[in-house]
Length: 127
Image (cartoon, rainbow, N blue to C red; front, top):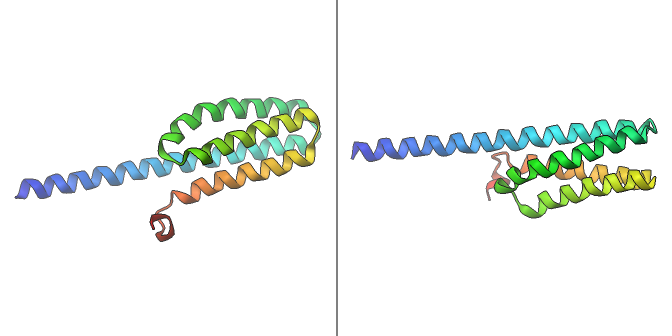
């Protein structure tokens, strides 16, 4: 009987540790990509389109790699939507559609903030 209680408690600790690790990973990545998008936004504001385009290309490649890991933990549609937004941001810089770029940038940052908030252990996220 005591072995079952110890086993259950250890299993509970493992689950809590895994949830905390997942929360930390998703939160850190969301913050990282939001900051990268904001740095790209600053380059676009400065009309430094060549640097902004390079940053957006790097962001797109980096997201493609990270999204494979994040996709295991989160909703696939949301992850795809962020990738599509980043892709559109690149296209809008190439086409000179600055207003559309900023609209897509804002959308991507909101989606990243949303996946970050969806991982916190709040009642509305559990129910």
